[in-house]
Amino acid sequence: MMTLEDFGQLLCSLPVGHSATLPLDVYELLFPPGEPDPSASARAYAFARARGCEIRNPTAEGKALEVVFVKRVTNPPGCL
Image (tube, rainbow, N blue to C red; front, side):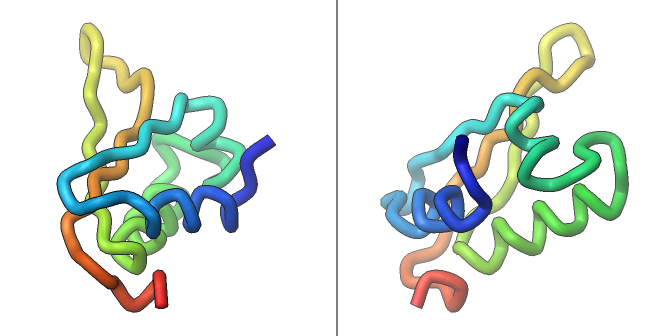
């Protein structure tokens, strides 16, 4: 089982332009209670930003199946 610390290390290790994908069930465990909860989304976006990432949510027929974290910044403060 992946922890939030494990995922943070994964995001920090990504090269700029690369991404890490979380299935919704894993996202819900790391950022409870998951989507569409606004506080869970806010925590996830803050977590991503601190690690130099942005979040993209690809959809299939209007329903998000996974959450994609894309690395945009080299050496962000959350990775030092």
